[in-house]
Image (cartoon, rainbow, N blue to C red; front, side, top):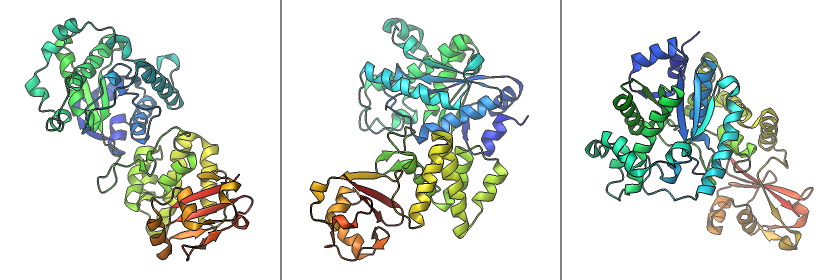
Length: 408
C-alpha cells in the first residue's frame, strides 16, 4: 500500500516535520495513534478546520487511528497563535455546546467503530488540575526565555500578552503527554501556526517519559498569492449549512481563481492526483469545468450529494439566465414595505448587495447590476409589484453576487 506520508506530501498537506525520516518509517511500519486538537471557539467548524479533517480521513484510510480532541479546557484560556489580540473569554456552558456540535461533524468523516478513532475532550484532565502541582510537575520543564522566541508569543509582545494566554503552550503540551500515556498517541498534527505548541509537546513527552514522539504541521488554506482562503462577505466559510448555505458554499469554490483550482482539488477532495493535475492544467473557459467539479465534490463531501446537486442546479440556472430557485440566497420583503414600488437602490440595500446608495449608483453607471437578467441603466428605476415573477425577483451584482428577493 502507498505510504500515507507520500500521499499527504504529494497532495500538498505537509509543511513541517519534527523528524521526517523517522516519521516516514513509523507510518510505513505501524498503525499509529495521532491527535489533532480543535478548540470550540465558535458553534461551527469552518473550512480551515476541514484541512485537518481531511488529514485525519487520509490517515484512517491508511490504517492509522485518529484522536479528535475537543479543547473544552484549552478554550477557556484561548490560543494566542495567529492572533493580534486576546480571544473573547467564553462561558463553560457555551464551550460545551460548541464542542457537541463539533462532534457531530467528525462523525460524518471518520469511522469510530471498533476503536478505529476516538473523540476526547481535554476538559476531562485539564479542569481538575491542581495549579501548584501542575507548575511543579509540568512548568518546571519549560524555559520562559525559549517560550518567548515562539512566533505565537513574539507577535503579541508589542501589544501585550496576558499571563492567561502564556499558559496555553503548557496546556497543549500537557495534552500530548496525557494522550501519550493513556492512548499510546505518538504524533500530534496541526496547522502551521501550531508548530511551537507541537514542539513543546514533543519535548515534554521526551523529558517526562523518555520517549520519542513526533509532530507534523500542515499548510494553511491560502490562495496562490498567499492570502488565507475561506472568507466571504458574511465572514468565515462555515461547514454548518445553517451558517453557510450549501449554495453559498458551492458558489465560493465555483468562483475561485484559476491558479487555485489544482491546490484546492488536492487538499479538499479525494480525487486521484493524476486527475487533479489534469483538471488543474485546463486553460481559459475549460477551467470552469474543473471549478464545477471542485465545487460539487467539496459540497458533496460536506453536505451530501442531494445538497450538492441542488446547489449546482441553482448555480447553472442563474448563469444560464433562468431566474428563481429556493437554493439561491434570498431575503424577504413584505408587500406593505414594497407598496406601489421601491427604487432599485433601496432594493439593493434590502438584498445587502451594496453598503451605500452611492456604491449602488456607481455599479449601475458601470453596468454592473441586473434585475431578472436585464441590465439596470437608471438608478432611479422604480421596481413595482409587477416585476416580481411568482412573487420573486433576482438581483445580480457584478459577475458573482446574486440575491433573490421574495415578496411575502
